[in-house]
Image (cartoon, rainbow, N blue to C red; front, side):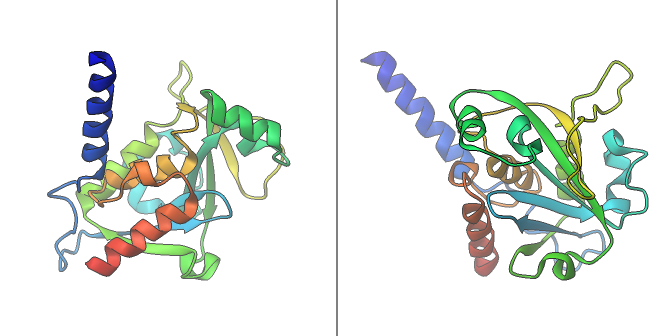
Amino acid sequence: MIRKSHLILTAFIFFIQCAAPVKNLYPPKSLSSDNKKIYIVKHTWHTGIIFSRSEANLFLPALADEFQDASYLEVGWGDMDFYTADRGNIFLALKATLWPTKSALCVVGFNKHPHFAFGEDRAVEIIISDKGFINLVRYINNSFALNRDSLNIKLDTVTHGPSRFYLSKEKYHGFKTCNVWTAKALRKTGFPITPFYAIRAKNVISQIRRQKYKS
């Protein structure tokens, strides 16, 4: 009984901590010239994070020599087998959900403004502080698995247009989906989003829009 109560209390504290806004970083000072713009883009089942390639250069050594001609990068994360498959299926989806699996990062470089590339309904703009931006990019960088030479590990996958896949050092499971990863990354900026409520892509976008409406 004591053990069960302890687990419930621990889960409650964890939930409260996840729900509480991260202070001192968001909202940024409205007139600061150092503020950065990022975009959270909604795809069918998952979300991606879009940011300026040039602004991220110093804090993204895992991609130091790649996508140099791109104005923007979109980064997403997910179960390696499902994410990189030519076509997902129920088996891959269940495997990814039921137990921890290897994961991958998907990176796309492009030059169109995100609102032109995806539309304002799908790509939601968020203005964050310079410190929050650095935290975000470092979080993404730290998600890459590196080899002995400290280089990223490219995955041999089928072609997905301009997308490139890289091995991540994190594990995917039912309570850490691609959208939870996005929410955790966004919290590094100080933005008060709750990963606990971010299992689905639409939950991520609705939380962002709700918070921006409050602001």
